Length: 447
Ligand SMILES: NC(=O)C1=CN([C@@H]2O[C@H](COP(=O)(O)OP(=O)(O)OC[C@H]3O[C@@H](n4cnc5c(N)ncnc54)[C@H](O)[C@@H]3O)[C@@H](O)[C@H]2O)C=CC1
Ligand SMILES: O=C(O)CCC(=O)C(=O)O
Image (cartoon, rainbow, N blue to C red; front, side, top):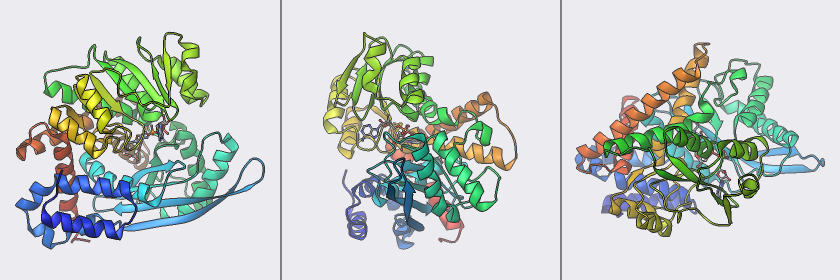
């Protein structure tokens, strides 16, 4: 994947300006590469420095988070919130709590969110935040203490019309509840539109926990249908066992596929009979344990410590854990095993070399910014529900989500076709998202 000389000069300047933020560089490079045909057709975009604007966050917050652990020791973490682009609406995107989080991680995630949120068509700008706080092994009171300290600083910068955070890795409805409670205490504002992914008791929309995983599978289903195939009887390999992976596995089973693998940072489990959802829920959701305990409950399953699952033969692969978890060698293994389609439930899980292998092999590849857009889309529906003081049902939300995902699929497909790259969803998603956000920036008077 090479850039033309103008984009290449721009990219080099961008890297100099954002040193050492390699994930951010990777995300920007993919977009620059994908939109080259648009820039060739519309050279005026270069004159308006549209790419320089797009790659520079509108605002970046970095703050100290001080909290006390259960043994009364003072802990200091770093908090982040990046508002990347507000052309389409309030900043929208999740919070990630993970020990590896840096400003560069948050910038990459917020940048991806620009195009993803544009694809939903739901009037949301792009943001992302988080902390290098490591929730592993922390008690419930420690999680609450951290969330309250984090919100003590963040509350000044967010609001239902400004910036609406939600969950991501390490942040689920429990954490959103603690964050929201503190937000209300500090602001004296009790309307529920400032955070999404809330428990329905606090104003959350039903099906938000399911939405990212379900949406990824709806996209995958549409992609297979466009090739005259279906999920029925297909073997699936899913990485991760968190929010996205769990609900992707559930939907795959419902649609007749057999998901035989899931994983966590300790390794992967292979269950040839199909992952048992009740066992998985009990281990990962209820008891927050390691996946290595799965074979204690399902003796026919095997756990592979320290390994990635991509050499298990499958028809469809769904990387749903984290960025760059599937590399060139993994892609070659999947292609050798005749994988039909790959759907990115996670953000940027395939390395650029892996993406290239899938492209050359003609494997249908759904990029995260399209495939996992169901989560943020359903968050936008939650904002709509909250603003109208309404209550949606699970079925209504799920039907709307499915339609949003089918529409995104159609837009990616037709955009790729328009540029002579039929079936290339990476090009289709990037160009379609880019066109929408740039049109909005232009309509706003190029802010
Ligand atoms: N929660 C949401 O609604 C959305 C999440 N995503 C993306 O989906 C991915 C998963 O997020 P969630 O399921 O929400 O998080 P989660 O915290 O519920 O689960 C994360 C999973 O990834 C695994 N994991 C984390 N770091 C890892 C590493 N370094 N190596 C191997 N496995 C690792 C964890 O063990 C866990 O199974 C992330 O890339 C996130 O950005 C994308 C769109 C929306
Ligand atoms: O629901 C949201 O606002 C955030 C979802 C998210 O963080 C993502 O799409 O990666």
